[in-house]
Length: 467
Image 1 (cartoon, helix red, strand yellow):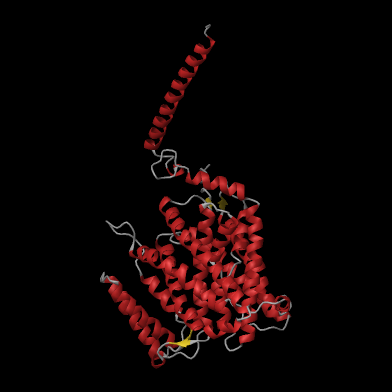
Image 2 (cartoon, rainbow, N blue to C red):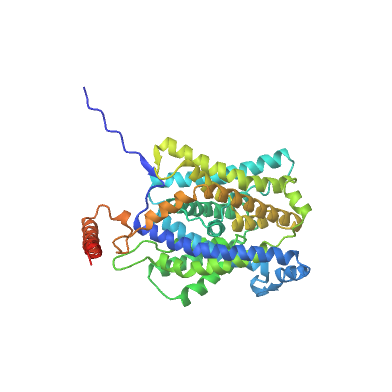
């Protein structure tokens, strides 16, 4: 009788990250968390400013034009924020995507399948929810892409505000979802929101990108070379009719994100480290400041839940995102036999999926693109994005708070470093030197306790001795 083939070991979903990956994600999310708090502040300031007695000044600043008209760049402040500053945001997104593809969670097709499918489902289901609401409600289908985006900075800001620190595996899953989400958002913008292409300008942009790629391959260094070239590429892309943020993504994807001998970090990671604070701390908050200012009243809030376009956005973010990501994750894990990390449970995945319903920055951008020329509907869609993101944030916060003690215990265990060598102990369980160091530490402690016991005994004998 032939021997039975051994059953392959199931893959672990949300398992322990490698130490370099854990450190990279911790650094990246630390910057995004600070940026997310600034984003929250900017959104609140925009709402207060747009609803204050001096609200006219908000629209005056928002519509103020500046830039060289001869180059086709006489744009409003709001336009500069959406097309110019967000190009920096998408540049960082491009670097993140490149790194994930060559050195991160997406480099292994089998491991990448789960977050990629989860992200795709997390975009498809919200679009489907929006479409169904508007088909049955006789609304506009133009905004189908609005609820498909996730705002990682806003999500992390919510975690910071409620005081919940997720275990590294859940944080990595959320970041990977956001990276894949950004990729598909970029494709949506490029494919569905491009019209009247100027092929001469587009050809010039591609020529500039070719020069950018060639300089990188020749190891040419110096910001004074790349920044002016990037501005030329961006302006050509803008004038081509293709959304200018695509230029940022393309340049980010061209950077090398693998290390060579003698390098502590790749050029892509180095540039990301320099540019991310500008993106998270300046570009995205300023975009929010000049895009999130919408009139808020009881009637306006009621309209969000009664108009098919705005209701579709809210339900897409709150219901579609959670159901899409969780359903895609569960089905993929089931059919690929990927077992969930024993320290976590499926409700944890659902909580993170709900948190991904915060779709602030890119949702606002797509809302502006989808309903360009209709200022009233654009403002209503922005209000629905704010309301939907707020509901998703509150709902996710409640779910995460139910498990906060478990998360805190896992984070403490992940960060424990009893031998104080700068490496968490969970990464040294198979290292003999670690166990020798721990043995020496325990022997020193044992010697200290024996000495204390001797002194305590001597002191007690002295006290019991007759005078």
